[in-house]
Amino acid sequence: MSDAAFYQQTDDETYASTEHTNGPWGPGMQHLGPPSALLTRALERVDGAQDRSIARVTVEILGPVPVAELHVQAELVRPGRSVEMLEATMSANGRAVALARAWRIIRSDTTSVRSTHADPLPGPDAGREFGRPEGWHAGYIDAMQWHSIKGGLGEPGPATVWARQRIPLVSGEEPSPLQRLMTVADSGNGVSGGLDPMQWWFINTELTVHVVRPPEGEWIGLDAATTIGPHGIGCANTVIHDVNGPVGTGAQALMVRERH
Image (cartoon, one colour):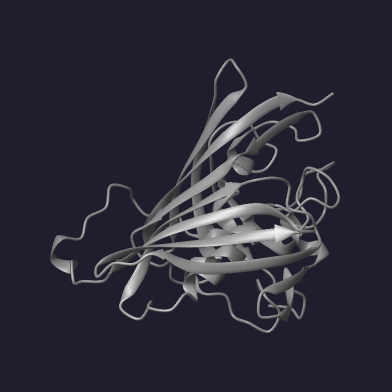
């Protein structure tokens, strides 16, 4: 990873966003991948995680996340001996822009009954490398390395792609496995939407990720498909992989609208 990062931490709860967080919709508006991972980082740091793992994270998008100074706070909101709920908030310019809730579950040995219903994907080396489509804005897309097994950014239809960070989430830190996953998970609708972001809005209002095990390695695979209805509502569904197989799922509710 380079010396650049998505965020520079300035105090315990404050982060300066860099230009690498910029999303495809326009200058000054972040892709949700880095904010989702930054919220997850705060959730992982809530006391009591030694024998527990985060099983689900839902990020509610309350407004555009600007490329600006962000404040992130997290807390335990529902304690429990086996299951507990965590909550993190992100604000910018005195306004809440995102809220994340997570369920954290006590770990136990379920190796003997382990199961999966999706085959491993062909590895990243089996795909072709691709970059930012013409006309899409610079930032997040360039800060990630992309390999396509099928489809990808700006191509219509379902997509199977691999991605990994070229830069850290927070300067000077190695991202956790779950942070790596959340940095990529929001791209499910982007790689499978098949619409030109210069002509259409297809923005998710939330991201819900379920995780059955932490991913191993730097590469995160997305096997994604987007369905668009007739009245401006869509849904992107993604099976999330590491190089050893599926690790969880992602879902996004979409607002789809032609840009004028």
